[in-house]
Amino acid sequence: MEKKKGWKEIPLGGLITEAGNAAEYETGSWRTFKPVLDQEACNNCLICWIFCPDTSIVVEDEEMVGFDYVHCKGCGICAAECPKKAIEMVLEQEE
Amino acid sequence: MAKTGVKTVKVPLAGNDAAAHAMKQVNPDVVAAYPITPQTELMQAFAQFVADGEVDTELITTESEHSAMSACVGAAAAGARTMTATSANGFALMWEVLYIAASLRLPITMAVVNRALSGPINIHCDHSDSMGARDAGWMQMYAENPQEAYDLWLIAIKAAENHDVLLPAMVMYDGFIISHTMEVVEILPDEAVKEYVGPYKPAYAMLLDEKPFTVGPLDFHDYYFEHKRQEIEGTEHAPAALAEAAAEYAKISGRHYGPLESYRADDADVVMVALGSTAGTARYVVDVLREQGKAAGLMKLRTFRPFPNAEVAGALGNAKCVVVCDRVASFGAFGSPTFMEVRSALYEVPERPLVINYVYGLGGRDTGPDLLEQAFAEGFRVAETGEIKQHVGYLGVR
Ligand code: SF4
Ligand code: SF4
Image (cartoon, rainbow over all chains, first blue to last red; front, side, top):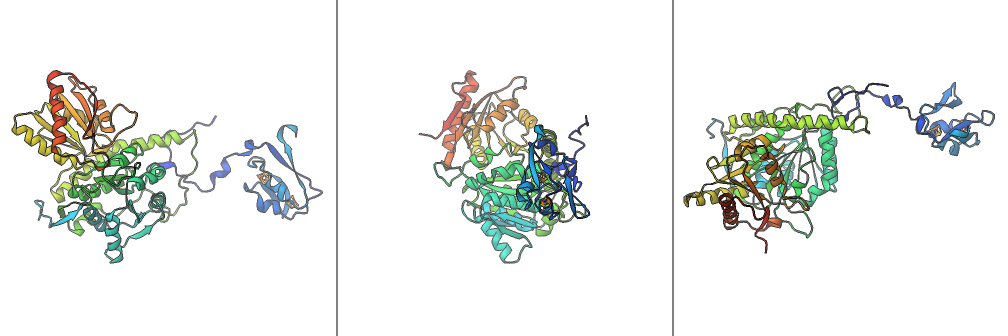
């Protein structure tokens, strides 16, 4: 387990002194439902990418290729917004 | 001219004007305040200085005191020297943000014109507003008169901004009794004040620092405690910072301000403890009793937070009875806030005095020498008999 710092070693007043370190916070475990992509139905419109509040839609060469499950919280917004119904929310333990 | 050689002027000023003068001379970067009642003439006077171009301050008039303190937090985090003022229920509306200011370690300073909290609705003096926030992480100092209101605010700024401390500070003065009563106040020259407070050096500044950072993020069970421990450490450095700031202030003003002030208390059998303007009345009563051959004394408590535990024990340890007067009730507690602190401070004194408590003056109830004499009389009875009939009494209530 990572050893946590004591009060003398941390920045004053709870400041976060490094930019962009939210990526280190793994929120994937918060998920109850998991988005699953149906590649066949997807037309790569990237509406899911626009809407995802956790930047967890993985895009390569302008194509939707899947999800960053380390950070995806399973909110289901991508599934709700997808015009092609290409994303299904599946209960984690049934998957 | 003060004894120190600094060229001062003596002007008759009410407490509010004295405090407004301190603000003007500090010329803070930002003042955010609610402009309507319970705000006092202090802010009106300062707004006039802004309108007349006598200061460069950005004066933000907000829609509530919650917003006022929030704006102060934002301004201070941006790197601005920030001041504000409030009173009574306006102070109560700031509550949530008081804690945030302290935990973000922003040395905002504020004048609190002590007035009773509703209900019932009341606009007069008591200490129920500021006393309620005694655990908010702010330094707290009570002024006895307009002169102290002016002096203590300047000292508070210097101590608050000390990088070993970095905590906000509030200076209290009694509503109407000090805020609206004119007395001769010795004002330092602008230059001397400017030099005393010095240029503002923030510990962090969102608008000035080159490296970006986040202020006020979520802080769970894994680090919240550590940040609170840091804050406690700041308060532990505050007494030394206040002493240092007061010593430097004495050099230019000739006035010395410790966390408390004893008056004829060294050989006193009965010592009264009082804060704010009542200390003046108590000093008079001590003189009257001394003339009657009674060994009475006074300990005026100036700094309530951080509480000067050791000094209080030292100042009161030789008395037979200590009479703690507090202009606030602590509902459901065993006595009022100052009583609890003083009694606790005396716990380890070898021959500790008996301590009794009087709650007085709630909602501006006038508390003259006659009432304090009553309290002293009971103190002498306790000192002679060694027996407390009632720990907590109420002075001047029907
Ligand atoms: S919104 Fe639907 S169709 Fe569009 S890229 Fe995302 S998954 Fe594919
Ligand atoms: S479920 Fe929510 S968090 Fe996960 S990819 Fe879809 S929109 Fe993003």
